[in-house]
Image (cartoon, rainbow, N blue to C red; front, side):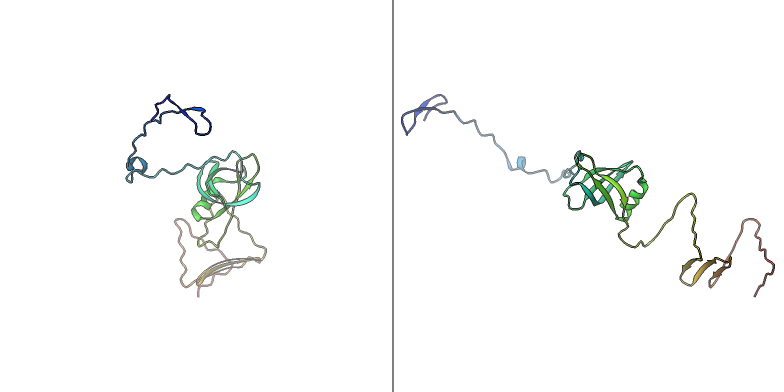
Length: 185
């Protein structure tokens, strides 16, 4: 055997080659190679997109909304990315999309982070909530609110019809019925 600085003859023509001594092998146990089953598995952080994926308009699924940004997964993409909300997009609309499981529409431009520009309704809602400071419902001919056997109809000529199997009305203050003619039964 040769030492660390011994020279040996090459079989091809007698040239000498310096041989180096191998470093001692470190001892690894199976526990060093396998993760601890009691520790929680680390979740990969969403990568921050400094360069957008392929340019164009794509749909995405929302994972989280924070302020004017959202964590999304673009359709066909393997990982989550951070996206900004367009200035005209209300963050509450995107939060509603997250709650309802709806998709969002995302613009991707080269060199820029993805931009969420709209929420998409992908199915008929089981419940519809309108919440605003003022709500206007207008129709040229007729407005009809119906549920089961009850209905309220407002016609263009001013006729208002309330239909139900039992109708109740209550007032904490003055309850006034005014009309040229009042007919009971």
